[in-house]
Image: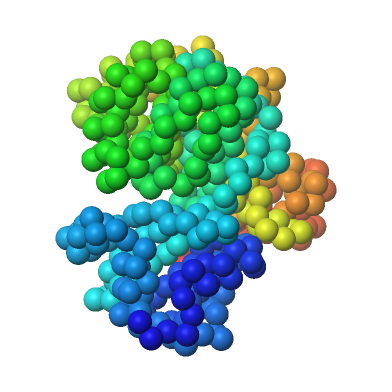
Length: 380
């Protein structure tokens, strides 16, 4: 490989500037994502496909290289000593090799250190049931789950089994016994691992991604047997999360799944990241704590009423995304424009921001309701 800087050095530089991701693409210099923004490292020459291939395969073992050659893409984890761990995806695009490497801090922060809602401590302390942490790719779901596992690890004596693709945060035993299994290394699939996990006598099971019918069905079954199960989905709010789970199953199975889910679901934590005005990024959350009225809505296919439950559930630790955004805006943690981009109900958010004196005086809620305008903004 003829390139002026080694992969480890690029990753160390990424960490030094508080970047989250390293993008390697043929025909471009290395690109850092810093506080959500892509920055080309123009001090380095443009990468070639051969250079990226050498960097990517250089951190793989032989089994991973064979797998990459077979399916043309692969997920794995990589650690730079005394620096950080990274979640890596190497892939092909336009007949070239590309890669993206996301930083995973070595030190796992606590719920308090991350400034997460304190109700997440109550969620982590639940004795049983299904807890879902949701959000788009890159929204910090794994980081939030790691903080919750750390909370348990520091306070309880439990056997925790995680199933991940790949392993991101490495948990050391404190009070708990933590076993972490990686797809491809330790098990063939989420479904295969879940079918056997009950024989491993766990108290808590973390499923890195509930991505298909088999995994979702087995996770619900494990929760039904009296275990606490954490899982993630790429959904944006609680009602969409419930619908996504139900819709995975064939129509004839959906009534039964609704019943099962209404019994085991305990909480849905949805989150997104925004630029922080002081630098870095900050998470905004929607939190649903599932009680009797929500269980009835799930059984009766009335998930569209879940936002109303959240609005009225402040006493139980519930909060809507828009409420969280308004709180961050009021504290000066985020800008009005960034909050507006992430809110779930534009008209309601603008009107509430106006009443609180947080919106620019020229803002008109109607102008944000034009679907064509919204599409143009997203496209840009």
